Length: 268
Length: 187
Image (cartoon, rainbow over all chains, first blue to last red; front, side):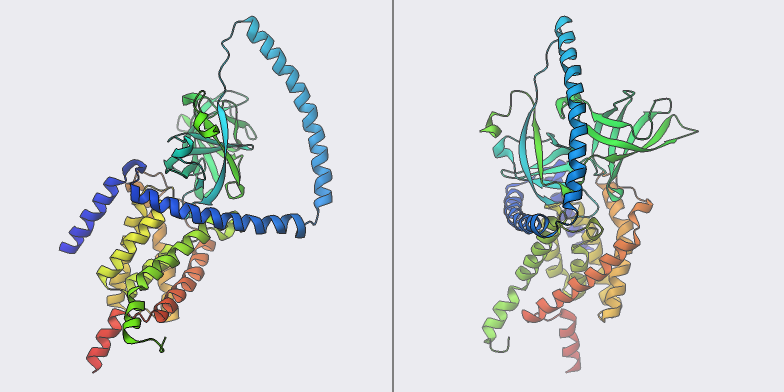
């Protein structure tokens, strides 16, 4: 009984010290040492993978190249037409005296490790408080929103991805502007859209984009695509399943979103 | 290791906990850096559960607790779960394994496989409950937690980890505490 009480006290004290993701200098030391080793092993693994991908596994490369060239052609046409819309939008905003917004700055970081537990989906990046990273900062990728920083040490930061069950981010449906909270479901590697009114217009294949609420992510960045809409006949909300735009296991580089006028330290 | 002197043998045995921790660190490094390189179906296994079961069976309470608390903390720092959640979760399994070790003889390969399988099965209930205590929104009774493939993967890889730990103990001349008791009685 005394042993059980002793262990309970030690664990309670330990949990209390680390509440809300706080880390001590010992933890920082352990994370820095582990992060360094993870960085080395990760580099070595990526090197081998690159050799295999670029020199050995070149089956179907020609066919894939042709497909991508066609896709690039289509995308160029789309970009040119969107440039026209952008310029028109800018002209109209100037005529209406809209206040121009300052842009966030993106700073690149490399993914050195994934979450060691299969039930949680976090990643570790090689930028820490020495680079000006702060808690809650947004992390994005060219394919969309990745997550938010939730633990920082001097040289490394841990990012909670949008697929993690504890992650909640504000999103809107691009087509209908319906607003909801996106939450992860780690086991299925997908997300669900919460607090969407039953009357809100959401359809399969709708695109979800980020909002600038809290200035965490740039506005309009791809978050995911709606894969299923299940209307709830009794309640006031509907269930919406979402496929994330990112493949967490294939992430190699990400970008930290620094709020306007803050990233001098990181850029240096 | 028969060529070593007695004091060298003692020194080697006293470093057993360090070697065990290094082995856990190696597992953490492998698991956290290999996820982008292997197909995602091979990522759903728990590296520390077999280690905890091994500690529960082959170590006395104090020694096992100390090793577990340090390794659990190391694991926690490499996961996005709240720090401490996995320490509590693995402590539960450590105590269960201690109870099993004092109640049944479960050290044959078949019984070890069964033990790891049952522990993995129970872990699917205990982890979400621990997560709820730490205010993490992992679904407690979700079918997604019950993947047959992951149960199989955990059992097979867990058994291999258990065997490697046994080899590590043999190399460092570590004798399980219960075997010493049996030896004394037989004399």
